[in-house]
Image (cartoon, rainbow over the protein chains, first blue to last red):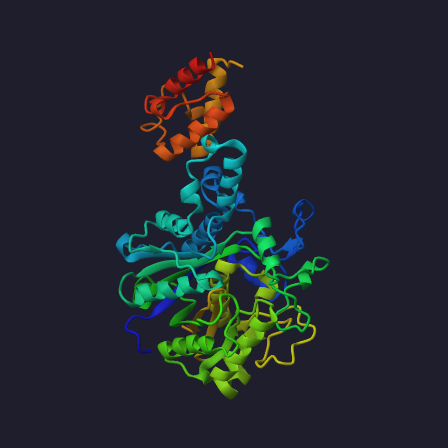
Length: 414
Length: 82
């Protein structure tokens, strides 16, 4: 290790299409469950939406938050608060000076329901009927701000926006806050709540979303030759990151280390990844150099793999380019096959999965791969979890976003 | 559609309870919105918005600062309905 301050993960929280907490989410993921389901509403007939399903959140936050909280927070913030409270309790509610505590929680889109509900209210009932909390609810930094309020985090609260890479960028930024000495503990993650007819219609218009309406649970199928796009998901995941010394001083349980952060941008196209994968390779290489690990150390990768042909294959080519023959001993998992695509929450839940995989030495499965794409260049964990080796091991979580954002995090055994 | 004082108090208490999480039984006539019920300006404006809807009245912004207690609000709504 070359970095002066090691960063460890001491708390985990999540609310996802697979479960209302980490335990139920992880258990469902290991069992190969799907969080996708048919939407019980009239959007298809009312708006002519071609997609009638999504990976909706398993546990409504109204079941765990107070009524005033659900009224003054956009759903994206509600999910983040549910996940953050679980993560904080899981970390043992660390005693830390607020000046040394940060909050970094990203959303890819922000308070979309609030924006659109506000617009409906304005048009239908006029400005006088608009709710005064509309602006603080819709702003994309609202989840991060509420998390900072929740725990009294005064070292800084940030909301990095990079589409589907946002959640991973938040975790990486949080790690850097600790490594550069700005904070001892940072609550970090990502959230998204946009299962609304407008984005569903917009994603359908861009031809990126699966239209497998007759079989929602089999729709998200990264690396299967019959994939037809991603499945929109929602939810949040939050990790408590801590300097190793701070965690050791209070005797905290450590899940894993976040030892490398790699960032790059494609500058190629607003939505398509650079087919050469140059930016993806750079991000992974930077993260590995940052962590001081070599190709032989990487035993697991949580792929970005959204279930689109160009995206899935570009990533595996990038991994092969980067790791060469060492890619043969990587266990590749595409957990969006089960959770759907949480957009701004994706990089956070997938970082959390990578932490769990390293901690339990178990790579979660990729479901729905009936016929693997022959161009897939890395061993894929299919259907059943795969044991990871003992000793010092490392994983990479890749998260890429519309706009050409590439984020790679190296997660190592503690 | 004039309401009785009691109906206005009960309706207002429901709105305040929704917004703050307080019990409706704590929303009494003599309670101060800021000092007793800990309601900030954004929450107060939210309560005003809902109260206008519920009681079919207009509560002008310049009037809101005069509504120190729950009783003040009940009286204002009552007179606005008259």
